[in-house]
Structures are given as structure tokens and as C-alpha cells.
Length: 99
Image 1 (tube, rainbow, N blue to C red):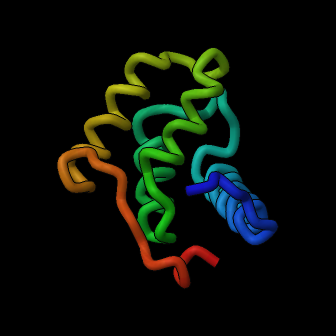
Image 2 (spheres, one colour; image 1 turned 30 degrees about the vertical axis):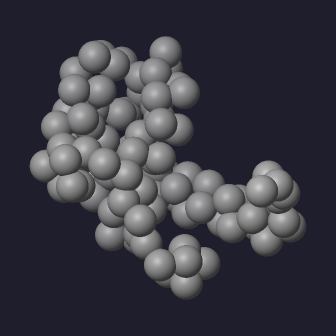
Image 3 (spheres, rainbow, N blue to C red; image 1 turned 30 degrees about the horizontal axis):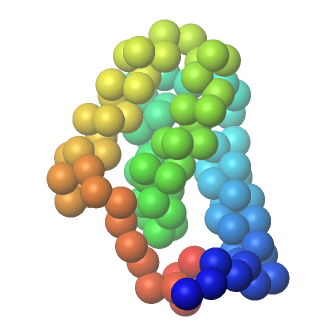
């Protein structure tokens, strides 16, 4: 089995990134504004738009040095993921909902 990437894979990934960043701008607005309430709003919106909250949180975690009180924000996000996904496991959505 080969690990080939198709142009559509890149476009889908880019589309996911754009959706996620738009949700970020609408909920958290900035890294400095990220707190328990805004991170939960972000994850909730990601979930509503069929974006895997764990994938989205992984992106946020890449910026943890810019987030005030990161340990509290991280704990709040983990709690949200555990309460809203199947035991904290990544969600899957039909491919037609991702575009």
C-alpha cells in the first residue's frame, strides 16, 4: 500500500484549516483572549461544524506558549473533549460533510 497524496487531500486539509481558523477568530479572537470559556466555545463550534475537536485542540496546543494560563485552558479543553466525544476518541464524519 502506498502513501500517495492527492491534490484533493491538500485542498480538503486546507479547507479544514480555514474553517478552524475562522471558528477561532469568532470564538477566541486571539491567543491572549483564550480562556476556559472561549476554548469551550471554540471546541463546541468545531464539533457543530463537523471538525474533530481533538484535531482542533492539537492546533491550539501548538500555540500554548501564547495562551495565558495554559494549564487551566488545557484542562478545560480535555474535560470538554471527554464529555462531548466518545471517551475522548477522535470523531469521524462522512467525507461529504467536510467540504
